[in-house]
Length: 100
Image 1 (cartoon, rainbow, N blue to C red):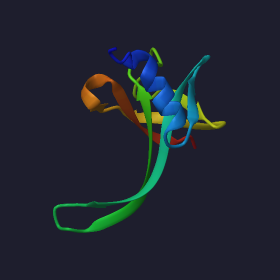
Image 2 (image 1 turned 180 degrees about the vertical axis):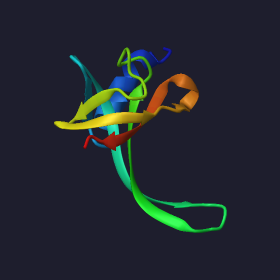
Image 3 (image 1 turned 120 degrees about the vertical axis):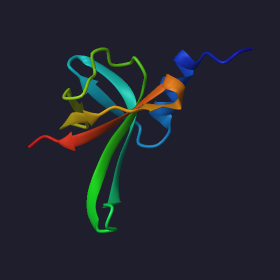
């Protein structure tokens, strides 16, 4: 029997990793939220440290999500700052920044 990925992906996102939900307006979807320390180097090999906050969601699960959208995860608000494609379009990784 073939796998129905439209049904399997939300289950995997809910039960893998953080088990959190992202909310955009009145719509919510399971997500994997990560916050990691990152070091970025320039062309002179000078580095700077920072935190990268990302969320992985099923593509199409939050209609209207775009760069600049305000989302909420566990009651904390973030703005979407980037949205590169991941896994041939089945998943979307969103880069987030804190709302200040």
